[in-house]
Length: 222
Image (cartoon, rainbow, N blue to C red; front, side, top):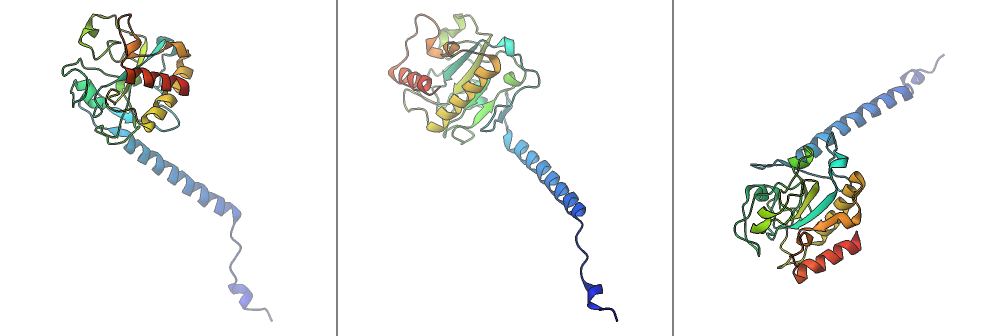
């Protein structure tokens, strides 16, 4: 007589079925994660929509004009509360810089703890980078005299939301700047001697002690 208990035993699970279920689960999680990252990256702005870049890479445009970029110019906003939005609107929250300054659409802005985003070291990517257009129009911004200088139309503009004459750049901002400049150098084959700070443009400019100290620190880390 056959053992009735054997008919109640569970059939072995098909390995093929397990593989299908796992693949479906991984696919669903990947799509959900991508959607969340996309939502986290968008930051509102009146003039220049910006997006946060990841730690590992900048957000490369669909069409990168590699040959168009020959310099990287690093700016000090002289306003620790600055962000891509306030810089593009010409708004000034305070600091050691001039109260009136030209609007500037930078390719990249590295936020500080006091920026509107509230995220120290957050990287904002301007639409001028996505569109591969010239960014900040004058190399010596925000000096009022900058209007008399030839625009660096072949320079990538990176602005630190900081006031170096009042407070050092944070470690998060510093590391983000190093990482970003290295990637931009690789993308457009820009040598180290063509990475400039705004106060190094023109024969009659002199950095403050704080600006010079940070430029030295930056180049040692680059």
